[in-house]
Length: 96
Image 1 (cartoon, one colour):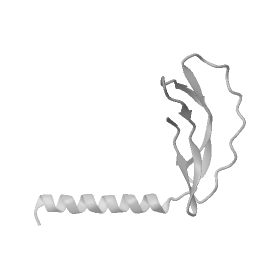
Image 2 (image 1 turned 90 degrees about the vertical axis):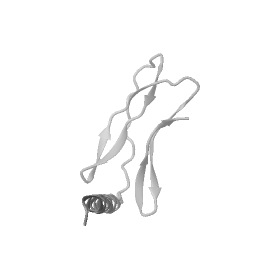
Image 3 (image 1 turned 30 degrees about the vertical axis):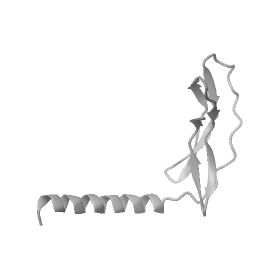
């Protein structure tokens, strides 16, 4: 077997393992309700992105809110957790 063929096989095997590991880690535990945050006073040129729960190491961890620089002509759509089949998926915030 030549070296290029062996590399292709190894790359394919690594991709298969990574994909199966990602699927095995589906988040089946619903996220807790969002925490109440004190929103700081408005800042010119920024929009508040509320805090969220992040899945890390088998549990939810709170990530505090932060300011996002404004993109002129767009509005900020905050991220949210959405039910997908038997599990949950984080939909990142974005400009629309």
